[in-house]
Each structure stands twice: as structure tokens, then as C-alpha cells.
Length: 244
Image (cartoon, rainbow, N blue to C red; front, top):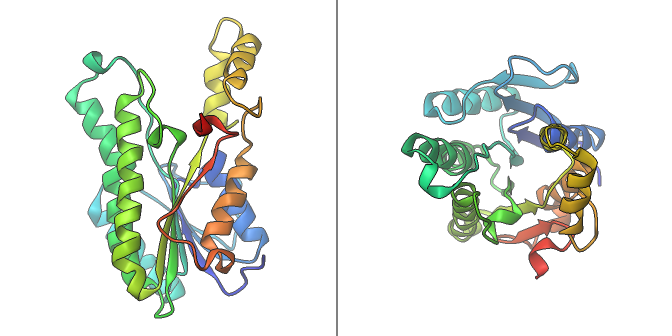
């Protein structure tokens, strides 16, 4: 599915799913504006513009939108891939922990959607939010993250209805456990990394972790004209985890 005439913004583009998304979009011909917290991207294509910053800061989000307007004029697709995961027993989480998780996963998404929807062309555009299986089902010691990703799903559904008359589609990809550098590093910190990997994979009906490329393929589908009649949807890419 070629995207030669598509302009796209990808947040959280530094590694893992974000890196796989930008690689796939670039391969399909999209012009990209990327953002993330890192000062620079080691594997960025010279044709891509990368603007580092904090999406919790509305002034920065507005600046990013101005970059997009100057570079592209209009934006056809926005992939909201940023976020923060912080776990632990609910009674041991601080109010600051709660604010950080909710801001990074939910309120920052609101800011991006608010500032980028006006840049979409008259024929419409597409927002794809990268959520989580934990926005669909709960899990002990992931309560705040689950609440934030569940809120992201409802933000997307509400925006999909509100913006449908403008042709703007809003959907969510909900990945399961994915073999990103962050997850792989967390496995290596376990006393027996391979045993723990087998344990986690055994909780998934398909018996393995997702690859970032598999998640990126779902993001591409929802961002592209191939999904032109899909909005307000949640697409789990979780190996069957939420089918229970």
C-alpha cells in the first residue's frame, strides 16, 4: 500500500514500535515528521524531520504543529505512539506517579489531537493511537497504566464520532506484549530471562510475543485509505490475549 502523497507525524519514534512504524511508513513513500524525547535519532532517514520535545507541554505540541504546517501544509496521518508505563501496587504509587502516567498516555494524546486535527485536509485524515491490551483488560500492579490506556480508547471513540462529519478517522491499535528493546531489557533483568520469557509467552494464545513490525503493519492499515470506512475501532494485536 503506497503512501507517496501522504504526510504523516509519528510520536514516540525513537525505538521499538515507533521505529518500526517510521520504517514501514518511509518504505511506503510517506513524508515524515517525527518526535520523541531523545535528542536525536541514530537511524533516522535524512529526508525525515525530527523535532525532540515533551508532548506533555502544550507549547511544544503547538510548535510541532507549526513545523508540520510549514513543512507539509496539511497532515494526512498522525500516529500517537508515545507513552509511559509505570507499575507497582496501587497503594504504593504516588500522586506524582499517577499524574505522570495519565499525562504521558492520555492528556498528551489529547493535546496532539487538538493541535493536529486542524491541519488535516478537507477530505479528512487519520489518527492512529497506539494503546495497549491493558486498556481493554485489567492487570494487577498496572492499574494506572491500564486506566490511562482505557481512557485513550474512549478519547479516540469520542473524537471519532465528533470528527466523522469532517472525514477524520480515529482508531486505536492495542498491542500485546511486544519484543521491543525496553521489554527485552526487562527480561534480561530477571534471574532466569529465558524461563521468564517462556512464562510470559505461555500466557498468550499464539504462544509468542509480537514483533514491532507486526504492530506497525496494523498501524499502517488504519492510517491508510485501505481502512477508509473504519473509525472509532480498537484493533488488538495481541496474539489472542484479550480474547479470553
